Amino acid sequence: MERYYQPEIERASREQIKAWQDERLVKQVRHVWDNVPYYRKKMEEKGLTPDDIRSSDDLRKLPFITKADLREAYPYGLVAKPLKECVRIQSTSGTTGKRVVAFYTQHDIDLWEDCCARAIMAAGGTDEDVCQVSYGYGLFTGGPGLNGGSHKVGCLTIPTSSGNTERQIMFIRDLSATILCCTPSYAAYIGETMKEMGLTPDQIPLKAGIFGAEAWSEEMRQDIQNTLGIKAYDIYGLTELSGPGVSFECSAQTGMHINEDHFIAEIIDPDTGEVLPEGAQGELVFTSITKEAFPLLRYRTRDICALTREACPCGRTHVKMSKPKGRTDDMLIIRGVNVFPSQIETVLLNHGYAANYQIIVDRVKSTDTLDVQVEMTPEMFNDNMGEINRRQKELVDGLRSMLGITAKVTLVAPKSIVRSEGKAVRVIDKRKI
Amino acid sequence: MSVKQISVFLENKPGSLHAMTGVLARNQIDMRAFSLAETSDFGIARVIVDDVYKTATVLREAGFVNNVTPVLGVAIPDVPGGLNKVLQALTDAQVNVEYMYAFLGGKDVDHAYMIFRVEDNASASAALSAQGIKTVEQEEIDKL
Image (cartoon, rainbow over all chains, first blue to last red; front, side, top):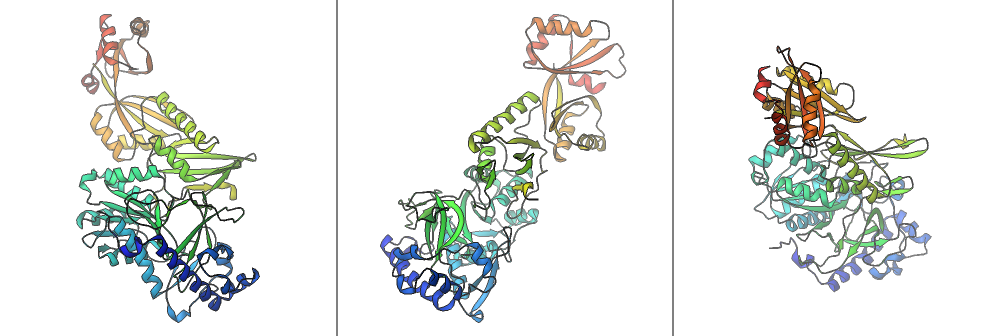
């Protein structure tokens, strides 16, 4: 039975959703015009005033905002409420440059936690569940967001934060946690550790997992589901917009429903900025229409995906986004070819290897080299060198047909690739050094 | 009819073989035979030991991927033509040898021992015994 946190919103008619978006966008544009000089200047440069935005159909008139704007306006330049009305900041990890600091009023936090509560209930959560939040707590939005959502659903919440894997497993077992929230790479590591302890999926009390904050492949989902004996749900979000819960998966597992009463999504051509029709792959752009303290209009996420409004068997009417292949930040350009780490992960798992890998990119004599290091597993090992070489060659062929370029495959010892408790470090690009 | 060989995955870098022999030494495991196959990136160490179960377990616990494969152990008289006679029997029976390696038997100075990795241990063993060549059992190896 499908469960909803806010069924009247999650199953609203498309007309109702459009009406909310029209009204809230107009109000939001007025709000930033009045309170954020940075936005007013950007709009004035395009010859726009709030009167030009009469409905969500006028959204495309507005200028984009990018990570560069966020850096330029750091720290207070985009804050739209007096600081005395703000109650919290959260911040990005800052891996792709200067940290982004986002501000929240109590109302913003309340709506963000609603979004996370919707995700937990879509994963089957109720007030009978025990929800272990193994995302980091602190500046990172993962822990605080799911923690708040779990409270709203009424789950018994275990705020373990990330790390100390043995303690994570102790709590899962001793307190019979039924829902696990963390990054997919950490879920895989917890699963690997439980397997080593001799635990079979039916001995693990978990029934669902809500995993996000990094790109992961469908194959990795299957792997985690089998190891932990759970259903694994994807969740998506950005600190810039609130945090996890901008969109989330339902039982159909065919894309993530965007909370359209809070965010308007567009897909654009990343080169021209032109808005693309439904179904087209392109860069995802979000406008937060209910955010008070840190509203963003047409924020370019650099995530590549597609949108669909096809009816979903779960009954939700909100638009679905496909699993992003990865941020354009994560994309590697190797010998002129675009390569996403998630594509490499797909090939590895399809060939029977585990998702413990590292991608080393280097430049030798002005040619880019791609070395995929993957751990040997008991299943893939053989006493016969010829057999291992044959499997290694199959993997190289599989990578070539997926990526269009030749990669070297290096088999390394088990556990030699460092396990991640948060976002996994998949790529080491030595070319930048 | 067969001997149990443990094969171990090793990275081809300084110290990785030593890490493995360290595990064996700390656990008082006695090696009967040892062979190494390698590529530029990794190697496979193949060992015959006195306690197969214990060895496989301690290696796994120490993080070494390994597996146990039944291989043929053959006692070969230490005289000219000894190996040739064994290979003749296998050739006549159309048995392909994937790899092989030799080791000397403990106090028995009259025989050398060889390990043969073949597709089908039973038919290879039958071909050898038809020519009066005896294969050795794990128990015999344990006693060496």
